[in-house]
Length: 387
Ligand SMILES: *Cc1c(COP(=O)(O)O)cnc(C)c1O
Image (cartoon, rainbow, N blue to C red; front, side, top):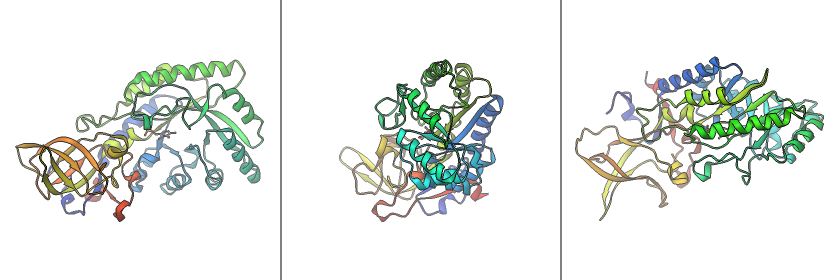
């Protein structure tokens, strides 16, 4: 057992399960907090869809972050975890009436609106409640993020957001609706972005749009640049805190904030990915003609990223003392051929009962879990549970 990274007692828990290194989470949050405090007007929201485990939420909440929600359920989970409703931003292309009502009733900071019909419905519901809805418009900046196509957004043909061409028309409509208060613009260019040039390109675009609007006397209180900062899935053990320095410095240096404006960020993956591992047990080691398989008790019901996005997660054997290594395909038990965590993984010679950790699984892991094959929903434990 690698006791430096995993506490004693871990081996007696029913597998599979998520294990969260809450010390690493706190280090990560402290780093974010540093940059937020050092840059006037910066407000960081945690994108709760990355991980909504209540134990993690309560720690994130302690650091004073705001929240970025994409559903009513997420708004409720944030409120339950003690987040300040005045720091909730609410995005999503398909907000239901009850979700809009929940946001209004709790006086959230703003709705990030993605279409004209949505704007009209929010105005209708707000009119009934005689309560003004704060609104930012989500604009497609057409800044390409060089990332997997399923997670790239912010291009003209995406279902998300409003095109730059339509921006002024929609702003005019927004300002004409009696129960809408127009606050600013929202952007989100994708996820797992490691090349700062993408964020630089977004800054340039935001500057352009601000200049354009300023010439028309349109003032913005809020600029929200979304999230998307990536993490190192290849070397999570040595590179466990994301590059917040370059990320926040890029925005500080490149984006021209106006007097009194606040700059909002919505970070999901970068906050929680590295603190989580999926812990699973080796059921069988099967030798094929060409390949060897380590068959584990976790499957894509517990972590779907490899099956859904061909995502790569580092995989380690945390109990073996073997010095000899072998090459394996690490696969799950689910009746779908896509239930493969990775191929050609070099591990110490692995045997039945060995514990395997799939690293960097804190983001879009537990929240995307399902019960396909009537499997029980995967549980999450934190380092604090073993203290
Ligand atoms: C998913 C999402 C985020 C978070 O993205 P990360 O890549 O996890 O940082 C932020 N904003 C919006 C609108 C999102 O949909």
